Length: 321
Image (cartoon, rainbow, N blue to C red):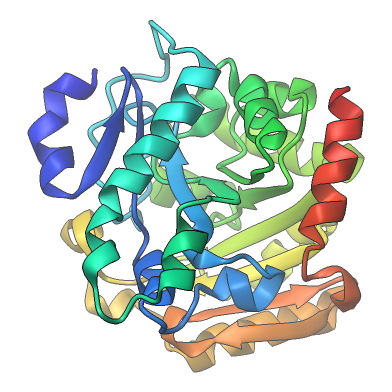
């Protein structure tokens, strides 16, 4: 339960929502609000960072305990016993997010236009911590957000393909983390709590081509641990056949410092080398990169990278109705 770790989460500036959800203001939300740089998701896909809510409906529940995760891993179980209503989670997440950024109203670096824009969130990243597919009403949460004109990016570790197969509606963009190129590395680095995690993960990759939404494979790269392994990643990426592939370097912060060292951080040049080699092998096009985030993205079709949110949300609403 959240109460077991309430003081820890509050100290880390989480906004707790109901019994199992939370929001946390991203560094890039603050940065864009004050007239500085936006998140790399703006560079890649056109997301306005100042209008983005970073949240999770599974704060204390996950199927993995990844070595590279910098979040607090106080996971109670792989089951959310008493689930909150999705409409409640959405409304309270918006309120909690707006409360967390309320202090920026008086900041001299925040223009009135930027503030007004931030007061109307247009995007929700369901990715903060935990495994969101453990929330059994995830589809209803995505639907509620869509009806409010809020696009959704869902990040999953892929260990629950049966959820993704039945998820309705699908998010605006679906991310699957691919950080274990072999079963041995997968089990050692991601520390799954279920015995068939590797098999389930591969079923998710096989399922992806059939899902009618934008799909992204995210490679979290840890130097001397899970990279480069080009042949192994190529095999997994071909199976998934995603629209985009992001390669992001591990950063030595948060709770990960107890498990990894600063030497495990790949340089941006190493990330670029990996990303460009995957593009060459798969026939994708290098699209963009951000040095400060140690991330690079390659695209199957670069013309589809930036999202026409009005069109995407209109199409999603038509499917719902």
